[in-house]
Image 1 (cartoon, rainbow, N blue to C red):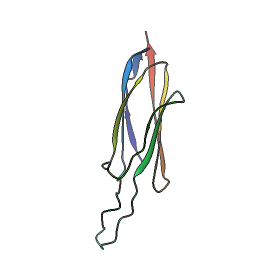
Image 2: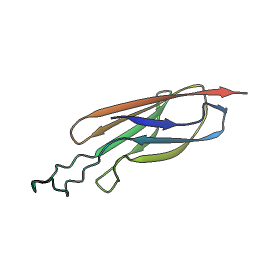
Image 3: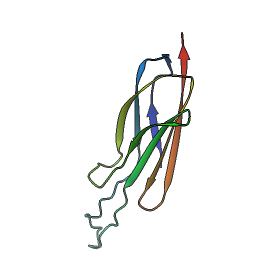
Length: 106
């Protein structure tokens, strides 16, 4: 699974920053059928966690109501230079991860 993370490259200490992630995933609901009429098994990302320098700052539990290639956005406070790391898992047990860096200035 491929993901794209967007957050500021730098921020002032204490500044509220916007964090966005888009994950390429089909998010199959289990309600669709293939060309042969067989049900396509449910397979959605069911858990996403974001950690800022190791501390959890965001958690989402997703379900079949989320569209393919889910996009999530949240806000956190920039406290220190470091890493925002994302981890997620789908119904098939496939896991993904992505990271982005932020630098505190001033």
